[in-house]
Image (cartoon, each protein chain N blue to C red):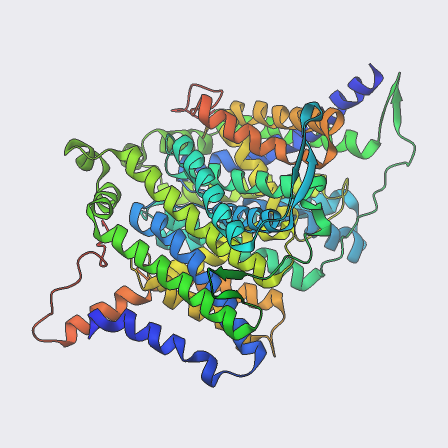
Length: 344
Length: 290
């Protein structure tokens, strides 16, 4: 049963457009899906390598801006009068390039900042995100600054011999997001269940021990950062082509905080955690918006975050797993790879 | 030349309040090992408190600043007691999440109570600035500078000359031994957080009337405080003082000679550069405070 749970959830999620007709709800499903992808990428760093990246929104925003700019085209003058003119390219190439560029920045940040750990790593990542936000705000020639990038084209997919298919309707975009989510889930799942994933967890649990048995710390941490940043970039690309408008606010710290809340509520270091947390926090605004202003909603998020840390520090998914295994007289062998034991 | 001198004067004034902000944060990090994201919100709290007392209640401006500092101190003590004391011994990421939660609640609380519109406080100072040769300084800035320097001096005295300061230094060096020597470590933690918060509130109370007061002012203040603390070396008060002036200088130069849009980027570039080149900060003596 448990082994098939991800697949069953996927099938259940695939039926959503059949019983959700309301465009607002479908919109919520789509944005929630995009944020779940972003939260999954954060979880790879936070949950599996134990590195709290509080600048994660930078990769999301870089993916969004790169993808939008590649598909819109741009014309900028760099230092020394060098002119870079880019003609619009197909949207799917934009998303792919967005993933690559985000992954590249993941490599740079990972390579540079894993020299510093703990509190310093957190602060470097925040600084990185703020610098990218300020660049998006001030490099008006490229990004339009606060005026935002407008009329970003929708995703179209050209299949050889089958013509073009565009993801313009909400239903089709929902399936696109779901497909990307499933692919990212599989990628992360394969990664953390492999040698690499075990090395990452070993680093998180006890770094000096891991080093002493020959695990190359920087290599695995940088690998995690690249994959994580690339997936966040994919989520950003989906976001840009869905909203069709993107402004520097996409780099705001609150989006990182949203991802962090999703991951720690659902359960960091579990594959299902970001999905569960993402669904909870994606849908809270749906129910709360009728009687709560945005400030009160954020106040509740903040209190929720503190309460989770106090009451359920491991998150919801590990708590449920523990509850299930305590009910079964013969505990089924835990999927050790998804159950990451906290060091006391 | 006149323009340069004006930048230097601005740097001194801005730097003195940044130093206050940095000293508060470096005390909290150095002694308690807590990365306090709520620090900037205490800065905003100080500014809003001045607005409340001086503009809403119409009381004396100087009294308002003193009340704001006292209120910051009390709020810091309460936050420590309610949120951080139960989490003593938790790892640094856990307490960081709690301070982020506190930051979100406080910032949106300000937004909820005061609205998103920027507030300004009228001050009793004359509108004509103090003119010395080619440079002009408003009297409010002069007051903020003198008050900040006084508070910086007071924190040096507190750390180096008082019994409480000695206990704080002892706790910083070795918590367990300090405890064995009869230092009430719980009390020291609470005092540290309260003093750090009071300094942040003081910085907000002094800078708020100079600029405008918005619910978002705390965001950037927290990050700037981190920049200062990292620049000076975690836990070093002289480092934080110098770091405050360096950050202010970098911002003035960045805004004046490069582009005003990148003013706030200077702090982050400093963080990234310092951490990559000299991760212990400019002050090598990270094992001591004072």
